[in-house]
Image (cartoon, rainbow, N blue to C red):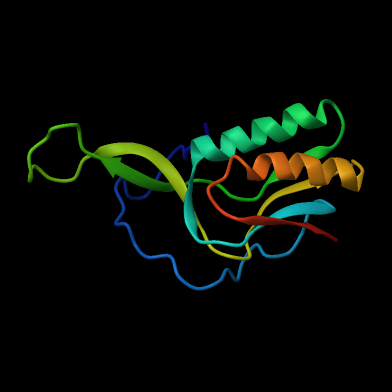
Length: 134
């Protein structure tokens, strides 16, 4: 799973995701991509599941770029812990995604293959996405 080696602050506040993305909205590396249409937190396990689906579909051909990285820590307190006692321990990391962000990019395969691979990956993600090409 993806997680940062080192973070400046161990625990973050939740924050609010609103608006549309201004960075990472264009294809840079590959010819085909998967673009988000919604706002959500995408966990490292969801990114990994989508990555594995794409790699399994591509076999040996093609190249994949993951354009997002989960670096926001999410905390969770234990089950049946009473109120108070401070913030819980970090349980996992997420990437807060906004509409317009490129999630994955593919290169070196036919458009039909890329469309099918990214469609399968989109089923593993909690947001609506669309296939885009250069």
